[in-house]
Image (cartoon, rainbow, N blue to C red):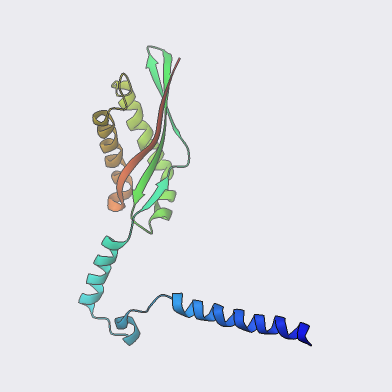
Length: 161
């Protein structure tokens, strides 16, 4: 009988501790939501505050960007980049759906940057990368609108032949 009593007592104690932890850790309901009293001004203000208080999400582009550096008709070097986007929370699906268009406009910009000599010499200088970032951000906003706040260059490598 003692063998059956110990598991039963431990089960009841575990259940009680679990319920207590669940009640203690549950999210608190806003008082206005509990009362069901939503004025339009209050809703607008809280929505505006939520958009400013919500931390951004980061969307990592699925593949690397490979940019050839040409010398006449010959490839001299390759630049490989990994890019991520800083986006508003909840817009990941929109970005994912538009990723092929983003890749296209980013590659065009990267090829133009390469053809203009942007990846030659000290291409990792903060001034040189700032120009590239601004261009990438401008192109991303053309595709996604204001939901993108920054383009992050997470990796950049140039391999010379």
